Amino acid sequence: MTFAEKGTFVMAQQFNPKSVLRHISNPLLQAFFERQGHRLTVPWDELASTQVDDIFDAWQRLPDVPRQNIEIVLHDVHAMANEEGVRVIIEEGLHHGEDLTDLLEPMESRHDKAVWTFLHRPAVWDAAVRFAKADTLWGGRSWVKRGNMPAARPKTDTEVLQAFQHAMSAFYRDRQGRGHYCKVEHFPRGSDHDYYFVYLSDYADTYINFDDGGHFQRTPERRAFEVVFAYNQESRTLEMFAKGGKKVVEPLQRVFSRIILGEGLPDEDPDAHPYHLDGLMDKSFVFPTDPEDEIEAVVPRVLRLSILGRKRGRITLEADPEEGPDHIYEMLEQDLNRRRLPKSILHVTKATINIRRNGDSSWHSLTFNVTYPNNCDLKSKPEDQRVIGEKYLKKWGIDVA
Image (cartoon, rainbow, N blue to C red; front, top):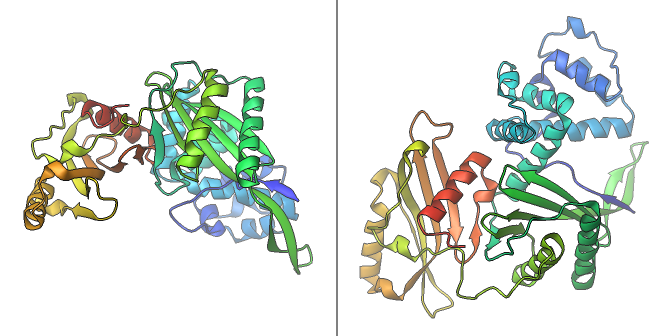
């Protein structure tokens, strides 16, 4: 059996290899194939920029392994060839000490920017793809956050990473009967986060594939699943993605703290929830902002309410953006009056917030979800939007971790 990591991530549009080739300029395409060790027998100098049939056919004639390896890279190129992908590349370039803006700006397409980065800045490319995958792979699903972490410098040396691998593997083998193989990779992101990507072998399964003769064959494989940790030493917070809920998340937080931070993790105060949302029920709730962030308006778009002491039953209010910033509060008053429910017995369990900026900003609108007690999907947003969102959750007193 093989232990295979799936190297590509979810993208907005379906991957079409010929379409991807058409979006890449011929000089970069030629350099791309030659860098992989394949001099395709095509008349590069005679081809128009969108004449890719000869290139595609020559690629498909390559042996299976190199042909498939090139397809994997082009999947990633396609996934990075958008505004958010280029932004992540720029951000990671800055982290590596180089502003790539002036180099990338003159290029014809975002696909060119992605391929050029793959060819000429491999360290930037590898990290950017990794972070873009972390931002989008789960389609915006929330990360779990906890505060009150030890204020320790995270360890990144080989010996510690190997110890972390052994511990993660042992945890999943014991609890779920999988994870016999494990690989941990550390990447710093910006100046405030250390990411640890953990790849573990999943349950074995059999897939129907084609052999070299084009016949069906059953292939046993052991694919990988992922757990991701994002630690912020300054704020003493840890965010992580792991399927399985509280019974998985809480023990893994302790494993991370013991090995990566070198300190035990105290029990989390059950009353110390990172996100406090109840203030959003009040129309007078203030959203102060700083002038340099050029924010025009902050509007709660959705509020989900639960009745204290009742496990079931929710009230979800979704405002019409065309009705103005106070529409959610008009709905709230009408609905509560109709149901004869005072705010004192209600609890906000989820809020969708929109931040709108003026026309000179690099982005104009950010909408994100915060769920009580510890979930938020800002980690799935572009880095500059994530930073703004997290800053103001703190400033508004919503994030109290």
